[in-house]
Length: 424
Image (cartoon, rainbow, N blue to C red; front, side):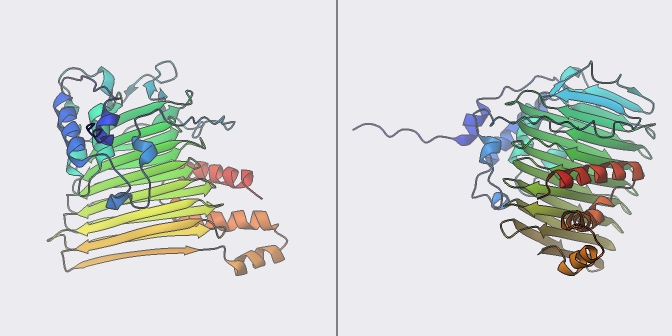
């Protein structure tokens, strides 16, 4: 009788397609991350935190489905004075990048940092500590990231840094890992733009020391078939500020995870996002904020506009540990469904072990306000333009989380362009 064929192991099949880079100072962190991947296994359909999002295309060992979209728009933030760092399909492009010299900031590349490095205390550390629930794709990233940017901010950066992710190879499969360390009192604005790759796995670890400020604004690309899993791990010191906003338009599958540990008193953490999707579009925001200090504030504000069968997911949790008194935690997730075929799946959570807190969460789905639409139509506004105006008004609470007016206006302009292209 023939022996039964051995059962396949999806995790090992994916790992067999990857080669672990050698960085010297990062080798121990990479091996520890690989051990976490093998212990957890790559995500499957039965995993609790993936029950709304099928991870198959993010973990399959075969090449990603072809994805390439010719973008006729000009570069986002093109008129802004910024330091540009360009990756093409996950490969650093020195010719298109600016000189990596900026007052008050040290910038290195992960791929070129072979000696002892300041990032050795951080690379993989915040990711490794962020597994309140299993995050195997983040651990996979730490183990196998081929490149990334290491930023040490010692003062207030004189201008923003812009990671620009270009996509030219229709089956590219990119893994990038960034580390950002802000010293006490330092300040940085970090921008991320572009589609990156057909399949993109990105992680960023951000350590915000006492009194430091980190602003993050991200616009994810328009490639229709693009699949991406992104991860942000942040640690906040006393009186520090962390604010992150993400705009996503199009893409077949996007999962953005954000894990924030508030460890210092009087810190502020805001994470927000807006997405607009049409058709075969699946967008998942998964957020976990831990309060472990006094008098801290956190906000989660997510808005999704969906049509023609698009799917939006929000999984957000606020954990208030014992002793984290005077916590102010706010969480809202809302969707605007422009037809009966689209759906919004939400799982808001609060877990509180302190007795002097103000925490709230809410989640709603709805259609365009017919009374408001009628009001605009009665004033001579065409139906499609009126719908666009109400859509932008719906997204406003999330977009207003961006403090810089110039950045905010640039993203609103892009949103308006998307809505105009998808009328009818």
